[in-house]
Image (tube, rainbow, N blue to C red; front, side):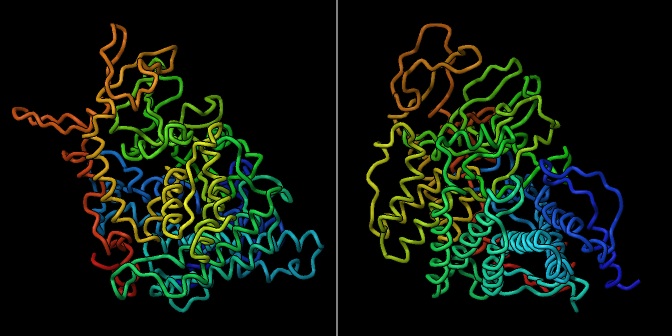
Length: 602
């Protein structure tokens, strides 16, 4: 059998009645496998085919853990924990080897998503019902077509932002003369995707016009179009020059981003901020409940309790939890840096959501973590109802790709760039996000600068605070060409914290019930605390940043990575004009038979 026939049969086998990725709205047992013609013979079957495209977002090799929790680190926000290896920690430290399977497998899954989407994009408009069916059929098929255009854009966007110029097939493989095409220019690919999303957004319903589930709607397509436009207009590591560059026509794309965001912002009946920042994660993501504000605009559905369709948020990351506790084991895979903790104002409610300062022991008691071992916190096993389905590894949390807060800040950023300074509308959008962070103390947000550079710097900082642990920071810094700068700043800031005597050396605490009670009313900012009477536990705080090596035993005291002080281990092997992109692994290069060139400086 030739490869073309084999490929077509493999594709047809993809479209079954089984789909596990979006657990809340489809749990159908597999009945049979469909031929390509059967897969698009009815609206129902076409829907199943499209749901199969969504499936390639999920699981361990998708946004279930690797793309969401391995790829975005190290940055000035957080790092992957543990000693360097040829796996997730090698990615985080930027010691990227061409044998690293953590790069190969997600790459392959993303292209499976592209292939499935291409089939749907080809076949759905060919269905008789698309042009001559009932009005209900035509409306639903148009929505499906818009969804797969959007999904293909997400798959290719993820490939571009990690690997740069990548192959960009826009037709199904059975029609391709060469199944392993060379890399396409990323600008051309972005332009095609941005045009596709302009089509897709007009075919899809607003959030309230459809049944609420993880399927894409108009607002998500528009938000994704804005995001892609900002990346198209941003800096990226160019294959030809081997340097970070921004194209001269970038303002064209900032205008697209601003206009899309403005249109979403004009529909507050569809998407707006939740009143309370913590609620997004505790009341909605952790409770598997749709948020009423529609702030969560695009989520990757998770479920099924397995590595193909579920997620590992709350198991791999989040607070460290003892297996004997009532919550089950988990946490500790992603550490948030000391400089990130102290980047927040004392009244900013986002700090304690993004960075829990506790671990949970076998008897469910919380204990204070040291300053150099704080974890991320938006996905917590202890926030989850233990009666809900789940496994030791798979907690079932959805991964949010875009929130409305991002729309507000993208608008503010793009508008500032276009107008050469912050307009009242840009300031209002920026302050809406900031005031929600300071809920109850809105007067303490400070004065918003309006100069082009000063407002841009405020945006850089606000996105830092707002999106901690959401796989956004590293990629923001790359498109601004600030990743090297901010890594260096993080290292310097940790040294400054280590030596800053206005920060407590130790923190004294005890349990009140299961919770932590502090001896000081301001435990993180009160420098001199007298030793309390008995009954209090002392935990290293600033002291934990002191790197001390026992000259006799070689034992290390203090926060460290790979037997180095914490600040020296962060992004240890980062190299400008190289590390902004991943390398193609040997497995990928071998598959493409010399048609792909290795990324710069690998």
